[in-house]
Image (cartoon, rainbow, N blue to C red; front, side, top):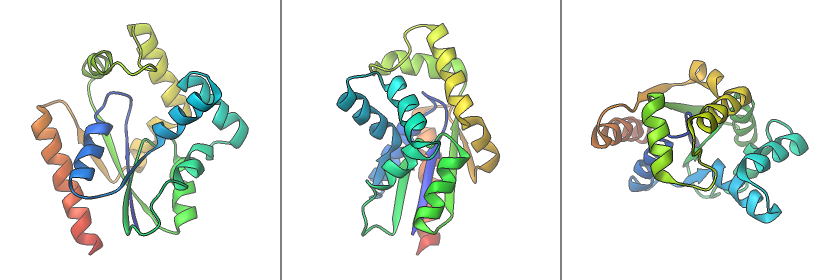
Length: 178
């Protein structure tokens, strides 16, 4: 099984990259959905759910819950939203495969503006909230993943160019997987 993980700070373009994967017919499982589902189930905010899941289940808890959602018949799967090396290790160990990691980066101002436009309930509304969220994500270990990345995609041009860059990487990985 080929597992492709897309990661990056909030607003970097992970969702767009995942949409490209879906367009190519790949199943996509989003780690953020696991957190949002837990938040709804528990009646708490997504940020509180994220912390709670990790406190109760350890640094790999969200990865384990995400693995439950992977279609069993797939030979290629995309996971959107890993936050740490430990989550990558959990996926690799559980599926006995090496993860291909795509790290998406974008300038902070562009990310902040995207999050304001996106308007999810857990998105920051002020620059202070935005910076605090980035710090929280980096404390989980998100910054360490850039050193482990197989591909780094910079999302600072047009959406069409970004989508094409992601499409090129994914198409290459699909062809290599056979």
